[in-house]
Amino acid sequence: VYQTSRLLVFYFQRDFAPVLQSVNETIALNPNHHYALSMLASVLSHSGEHARAVETAERAAAAAERKPAALGGLGIIYA
Image 1 (cartoon, one colour):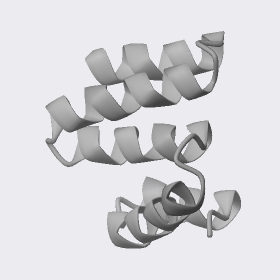
Image 2: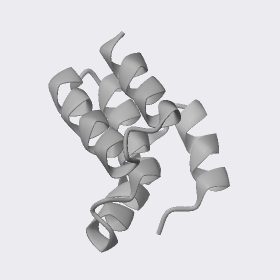
Image 3: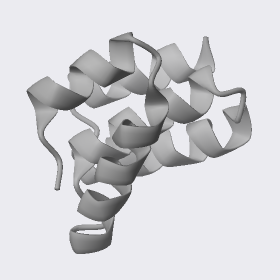
């Protein structure tokens, strides 16, 4: 399940496999886990899956009740 500190190390090393495994497990347990959705959107974007990234970032923003941090993440995905 999602462990933020450990996964950020993998994320910044561009080792996305463990990040994807963990965020997918977290989302399976809680489909509205906005931080896991945001991380998934970012990984998808970096992997060239922009359409899925935008869709996932929209889900993350909705799950976070469109708070500024979530909307900022959405803006980064669009950029």
